[in-house]
Image (cartoon, rainbow, N blue to C red; front, side):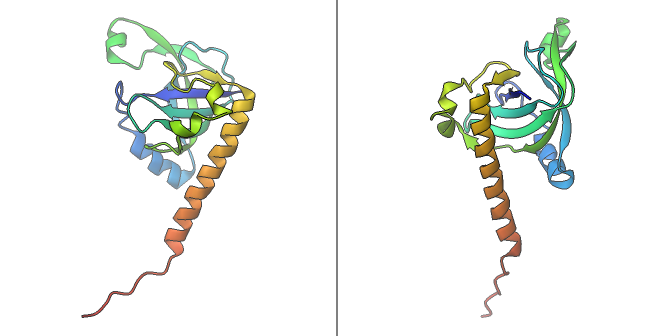
Amino acid sequence: MATFLFAWNPKIWNWPDLPDYGRRIARKGFVDAQWASGRTRQIEPGSRAFMVRLGVPPKGIIGSGVTLTAPVLGPHWRDDKIALGIQTLHLDIRWDALFELPLISFDELAVPPFSRFRWATRASGMRIPTHVADALEDLWEKKLAALKAVAADTRTAPARKRRQV
């Protein structure tokens, strides 16, 4: 199955549900959400999805998931475009990881094999070449594993006793 990049730019939209999505993923393991797919129609259900944060630092990969539907035409996500009657393609994505800050930074994406892909895309739905997607998947899994290890260490660390004066 192909891998696609979806983009979020906080300069354009502040994504008020993002913190709640992270909590829902922590609780149930996933969250389903609709997202624009740019002009891309050839995204099949079951395709791998990654979310990139753009516009303002820190920039980088903030999420992963899988597409649940193919893109369909519907109302635009921006109010000014809705008022003009402009439509856009959108699809449903099941996010299995989603963070407010990147787990993989633009600095990490600036070296081969990642540097062969344009991460600062202007639109969602960009297909990531297979060799880049495979490397991204490996790095993403390592980052998630490291994050889980830190969380586990924090939960199992013995509490410090208070010093009595």
